[in-house]
Image 1 (cartoon, rainbow, N blue to C red):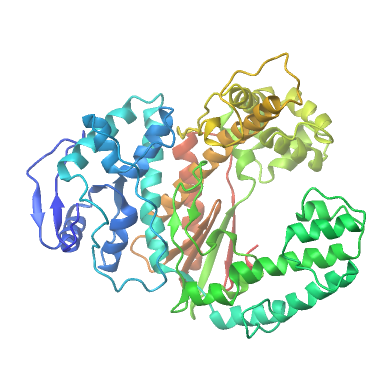
Image 2: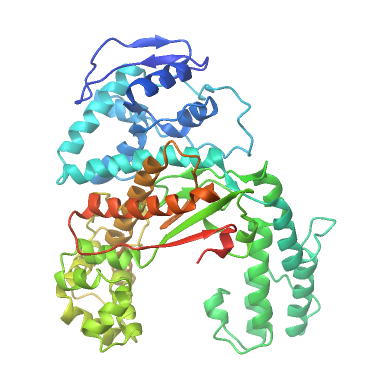
Length: 552
């Protein structure tokens, strides 16, 4: 536990989370933690690494392992069907003692790059939280609750991967993604033209807006306004439900290609334009604030900066330092392989042993038609059960009944208002939380299939159908990341970017081959940890590039 003066309290624990000695007050927490880490490499237990670990990193202290109470509490609450309850140490302590449960504090606003000049341990706002005794008690309670889950071994791996993710997120935020601001400026000038001297749209957007208005036969039109665009199309005799790209592409009108180009460039200007560069690039690095498990499926999110939505054209600005390079690893066909591994379908698992899963399926059951095989498998996982997918799904159901039944069972559970879990035990939120738009009610078999209730149930079923696969895929990727971090310890290589199923390592050019081998080995290790001895392979597409945009 830290205090605002940089001191804190350390408490040794045994394997069950009980005190194994007296608590020790230390005047310099960073120095004490660093010394203990070097000597023993223990598993550190703290309320939340999101606030404490960045301070330790600024003091030059890196940790090998931790147990993050806040992240673990969220997992356990979800597993118990109490998704969304406050998950902070104070809330967990209050539940144990029967006291009123306080709400979680609001998320911190992202700090600008170069914010490491503040105090080592800033005092948290509001009243002082629970002390070391509460932390110890909550940790012991969490260990006991994990042991009572249906698959405690799997759940322990989930907790370990989630807690390791908190360490990695802080380390990647501190290291930053190499970024050439001069190259970024060149890209913006190429795409958008000159910036407006008065802060309005750049030249290229202004020109496109004028051409769009001309195509509609009006003097002026705000092309960034969906309402104005819909009205303009309606006046031209074209009724559209929205101005999304997929709706516009089905329309024959001279304004359509201009609007599509405008939308793409407008998104770059607002999300990664000059203002973004000024706010987020410092010292040749982009320092986003990652949020492990920030999405309900367990995927990561970020607070500000749009790190997980960097357009490929903007990635041209991500250039390795002189003498260094990037090793980029992308797990192809990850979710279909997860289905093959978790469903227990031996025939699909055998196909999952191939380098191209869709091609193997095509040879096995779809008369060599890879497109139909892909359509069927994706349709089964994402709920695309009608139209052109219907005949392909019939083949999938017949040839791989166990795999098809796995996602169908998850869909039916969701439609009935039930909860589903990932392979390691992450539990989906209830329909009442707004995910999948489902209602926590048993659907009426005699109800109108087009009624709002029936549509909501189907939407919920599509959500739970994919949750069991997407959440497990996120677990595999997080485990890969954690094992790779361990493999890179003691080397100059640094993890600098992680997005769903893609990892980027920045390393000296002479070390690239060694890093690529470590990435591949970490993928195999993650597969073994999650699925044991499975015939399913999880191959990684590896690229060694000096510019991120050049990765395959």
